[in-house]
Amino acid sequence: MQKHTKENGNVVYGDLSRQVNLKLDFKGKNNIIFFAGGSKNINICFYGNNALAFIGNNTIISGQQTAMSSDSVLFVDDNSSFGGVTIRPFEAKNIIFGRDCMFSWSTVVTSTDHHLIMDCNTNNRVNYSKSVYIGDHVWCGMEATIYKGSFVASGAIIGTKSLATKIFYSNTANAGIPAKEIKNELFWLRDSPFAGQWTKEQTLKHSNIPNDDFKFTYNKAEFLSPKAIEEKLDSLKTAFEKLEFIYDAIYCNKNKNRFAYFKDMPYDIPLPKYENKFKLLKFEEIKPTLTTQSKSVASQPSQPSSLELEIKILKDKLISKEQEIKNMKDKIEKQNANMHNLENNYQKALRAKSHLSYKLGQALIKADKNRYKGGYIKFIFEAMKIKREHKYN
Image 1 (tube, one colour):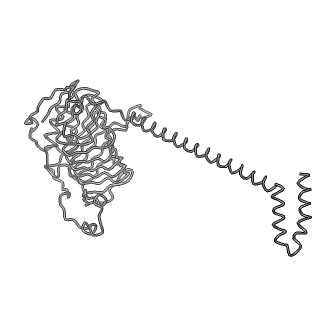
Image 2 (spheres, helix red, strand yellow; image 1 turned 90 degrees about the horizontal axis):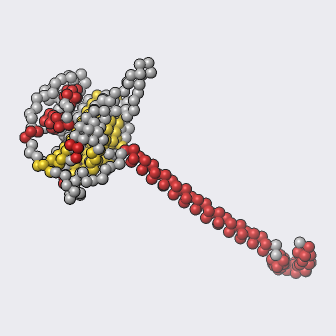
Image 3 (cartoon, one colour; image 1 turned 135 degrees about the vertical axis):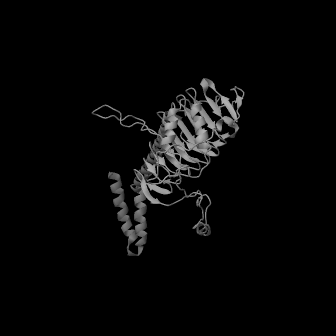
């Protein structure tokens, strides 16, 4: 495995050639990002110091830039995909994702309220940040939020537009604001009727699928208690110490039921024993150079902050609205010009109708229609009348 040493003690572990569309920005010092294999669309900014991001193999994280603050940890295990997510591990708290998680677009996972809330009587803060733990094979629907202090156990579903704020048990479906359990004894699959463009026959074929892979059970001897993980991470001082622990105790733990949890099961229990496998890894030291701009993380331009991105989006919307207004003005001016032309044509028609030759012609046509009833005799007198009126007008 490669070890890329950057400025200010920042380190990147992993083969950068396997990271597709990678964007990293180190604003602080002594931060670590570890790539266990290949990834896609990773976009992380380390705003503070001593933070750790661990990205599993075959992981896709699309969405807003992930913002890492000082002493925080982000762990995403293998085969997880995020269609459009905002991840915010702030205030030295942690966000942990298990294997094979699937998050839809416009989802949010945050350890903080982003602003302080204080008690009026004591002036004490009441909204401290809390870590978020998400088990294996968890599905989060579009526009849902996993909020600080949540533990979503393996196999659970968080429904569209829901707000998760507590513990959600394995193999359950949960929805609402705040989210609550609406059904249990369920499992979900990644098979997509839309992606496969299913026919009626294919729908019928998928009406029953024998599969025990995602039916979880609680095993006290295997359970990785979020409370025990949190206590261990709090006891570690450096990003490297946290990396060793995360790799050995969580990433190398392949037990199916490590994050499986159900109602009334023991929660506050110690971690299972684990082997120290990180020290067995061999690293190829790679120093930063200016000749590898296409692959060097350090040579990439710094990425805009979330606020800068929001400002850019608002500016783009403003420009779009201004163009719409200009197009509308042009359309109105064109319509006014057409109305002016119609008015001119109408006035010309009125003048033509009042012309002597027009009136005499109309009288002659009328006389011709009544020629057998003395129409032409009447025309002579009508013509004399028209000439007199025209002369005086």
